[in-house]
Image (cartoon, rainbow, N blue to C red):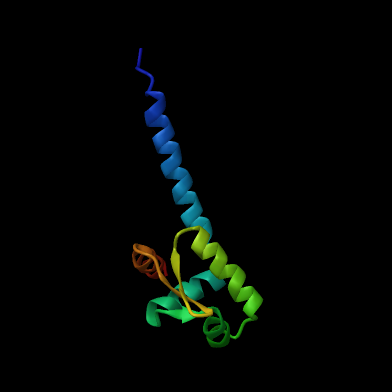
Length: 102
């Protein structure tokens, strides 16, 4: 009879797969992928600059950036009254993976 995995091992694997799910859901939108690509090419942008460059409403850009930040794909840095954005560690690997899919 096979041994059952220890509960702590199962919990660790569940936590890992949930983290992966959060990351995938974070970039599972064409606008969010565009934002990630923009930040790859031009790091340290603010919401207004992203909105202008992608020709989308600031509110829309803000919501997409919020979701990217929650998933851990971008980091925010406060500079005076602006919030500057850049790719988080590992996000370039995700973009490279996505580029290979096409």
